[in-house]
Amino acid sequence: MPAPEQRRIIFKHIDEDGYTNDLACYVRHGGYETLKKAVARKPEELIDEVKKSGLRGRGGAGFPCGVKWGLVDRKSGKPIYLVVNADESEPGTFKDRYIMHQDPHQLIEGIMITCFANNVKLAYIYIRGEFPHGARILESAIAEAKAAGFVGPGILGTSYGCEIYVHRGAGAYICGEETGLIESLEGKRPYPRIKPPYFPAVLGLYQCPTIVNNVETLCHVKYIVEVGGEAYAKIGTPNNTGTRILCVSGHVQRPGYYEYEVGKITLGQLLHEVCGGPLPGRTFKAVIPGGSSAKVLKAGERFKGKRKIGAGMVDYDWGIEDVPMDFDSLAMIGSMGGSGGVIVMDDSVDMVAALANINAFYAHESCGQCTPCREGSLWMKRISSRMIHGEARAEDGALLKSVADQIAGRTICAFGEACSWPTQSFLAKFGDEFKAYPETKKAPKGDQALELV
Amino acid sequence: MMNLKSETLARIEDVIPHYPSKRSATLPLLHLIQEDIGFIPQEAIEWVATKLELQPINVYEVVTFYPMFRQKPIGRRHIKVCRTLSCALMGGYKTCETFEKEFGAKCGEVSADGEVTIEFVECLASCGTAPVVLIDDDLHEKVDVAKARQLSDQIKQEAARRA
View 1 (cartoon, rainbow over the protein chains, first blue to last red):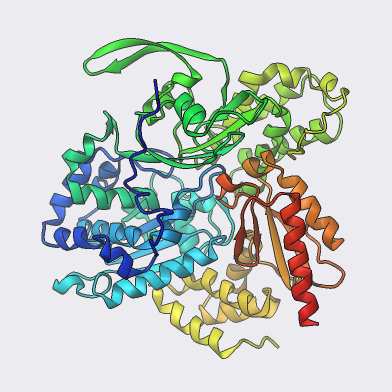
View 2 (spheres, each protein chain N blue to C red):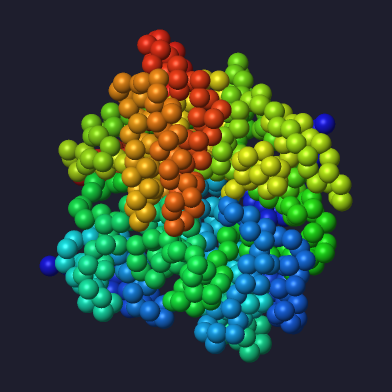
């Protein structure tokens, strides 16, 4: 079946000739019209539209946005904050970068609608430190929007006001974890907080109710308010509504970002048709479908079971090419849609080295607060790195897995899972390669073999 | 003595009221100081602590946690090569090696002439145009060996013009 057409809603103007990131251009393309309509409505109605839309967060966990907003403590008498998670750091993910650099006002409009709907008077955009231009672009966009009355006190002639400030991170992946981000925004080390009691919706920034939403999610909010929650819910597939930006990197002919209705395109269509298939003379070996912490899929593996379609249960028997790119299907086959970052590896890749690369990342990024993660992520790095650069033993795979198994579920935040899933899934699917590694290492390496760690 | 530009001082005064709690201004102040003088000296830690009504340890623990803050000066130019998987799959390690050869400096070191610091960093979020390199504030995409040599030449020419 041929791949469907892209449906560009969030990336409508990305890379468009003549489209610039200033206010005039945005307004010329209908910008801030949705905000004007929004402030004429009741805030509760806007929250209701988002609930009806079925929008799920685009940062990684896929938590329903309307539910998240519904959890906010509105009776505490404390201010409510919005924190925009623009700390895009999950390896394989590169979508928010383009929104912020090329279409910052789309994000600002989404922020202002969200703030108005939730009675937020102060919002922060926490942008990763490695986007210095992005931070400056956002700052000047906010200043422009403020001068035009879209941001700041008394927006659009109403009595409602809200300030937005840009806050730069400084190179730590853990700041993408929402409670770590909040700690960082408070000027501390980004040690994630334990939940309960520190659910951001109740005890977030400065111990006040706080909404943390991803950049792409907030752009969807803008579109939902524009077209209505019910109309939005018709895009995509049930429980996986709207569009999502899929970022493809690694060994394909045409890597890049593609926006599709959620669940309307399969992994096979995405990789073979949209991305042009493997590089010349190569075949696909493995795919990580939702950012580097998502469990790896192996070319040729099959998934069988029953899934819900409408009211009934239907059998499915999928190869990896058949898997629809939505939250539920990817979870059903034991991985996740995560942040939408699809990393592709072809048959030239040494899976032990690939895992060693990922392990080095997580060892570098563990915040060090919980012992299993701080020690375990380092040991996984050291063992897998030794397999490549030193002596490899047939039992190293089992050793790696035993370390990973002792991290997941024993940490304050989901980093514990994020750092163990790669090891667990690489071992489950490519265990033979790990076992045979002492022998494999003796064979001469091809000229093409790339160093990965 | 730490000598901050008047512009930096003005931006510091400007950013503190962005937050209901002064402590939140720790990262912004450290960024501004590092942009101005190139690193975070001990006296800056104490200065920020006084400014934000904190103890020096509160600032020190931030400086030592976040990879982007440094306590020592670096080269005039900062080359950050992405090390993470998508870039490595497209030859990121060769890219890094090329810069090391071009400037005769290892990763994490300053070149002998003080011109560059080369660093391997984790994912820069531009995986679709791998391998990527951040030179000072500018992102360079699809930096294969040839492009790494070309960028190195450019840096050397700019250094020569300044000399």
